[in-house]
Length: 496
Image 1 (tube, helix red, strand yellow):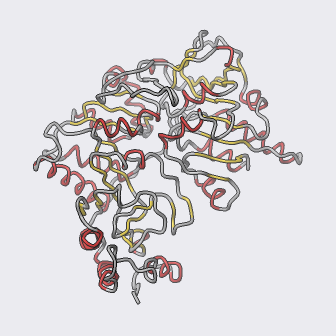
Image 2 (cartoon, one colour; image 1 turned 90 degrees about the vertical axis):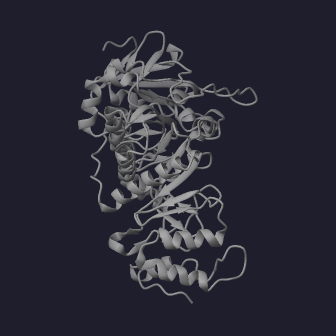
Image 3 (spheres, helix red, strand yellow; image 1 turned 30 degrees about the horizontal axis):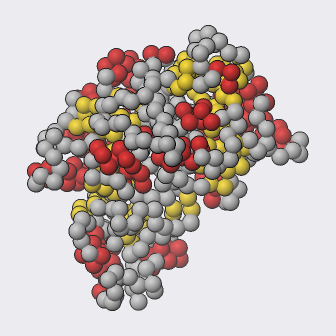
């Protein structure tokens, strides 16, 4: 893996970075995330702080990353600001303590926001690659995210050339970046399988400051096996979609699926694969997880478009052992394309995303615990939800051993309003909200989606409020949340 550019150590690359610099790092989940240079920047930050000098950088990525990036920088107190999404516990702690300024963004908007200069000038792009050529062609690894945009706008580019990633990944990527207004045209992608760009990121080679040679696998963790609740959610989703197809609202050949990240998403896709009334289908999504590869292997999933491959170590081994098989079945795109509202609406994508809580009117909280503490961020769920053919949100009806109801009178933070959410599904049942008034939605969600332990107080909430088009009570709207803050348990909540 010989490099035509200066070979740097990670420490030498980190020495190029100055306090206050804004850096665009590769990574969309831990897939394809920069690893060596962020750790070296974190070590430098600790040394600078020990010497009494300030050292923090602005951190922009495609989405979340691995512990070597978000975790190390957070622990080193090296993050000035962070956007657009994160999932690291150390960084989350800093954000909720007010020590890191975090601004949550729709993932489809991040690349154009960077190009427009709204976030400031990007000094460095630090991206992982499996191959780089003298003419400035860069072959990315297991994600695209916003790496192409970072490379295009940054003053200088530092490449982590990762020997753990094979150069045979060339051909999986489809790099396309739209022009900015007022010159933007339609994105010429009309089917999930269309390719409209290049297999490489192309940059002026004079802007490549150097190459850091690494050999480190993606820091993806293991996924939990489905439990009783996630299994029920998966079956409820699959049964709902099969029923929609039978009654003709979903075309018989089916429509592309978008699924969020996590154990619930894996359970949903597994259930869809097992349902005989769901035909072989395609995906147009952000992330491919283990369950997706199992569906491809079985023939139930015929093609998948994504911006990241985020799998367990065992599934990664299977993927690399069968690249030729997957090459004709998977494409990796920039998040600006994988999450693009124009494409979502054109293709008729069915979106399936998870929420922290839902209220009885159909509003969804995806980001904040008790309305104040950030979990991860909105991610791409809004990109898909607001433009989907059918938008579905899923969550278990209970959390914390039954102490928390995820179905509440009013969400403590709103990420997706009732105007965008069409279906809510829990392990308890299904609430199809299409064509329903607020009163009808409220009774449907309370009866079908809430756990039996909480149905009565939700019904009582509605019975106490009769005025207005939306039967909401400012006095009782957060009664569930107040009860939990006072006692640590939502059970036994009373309406007044």
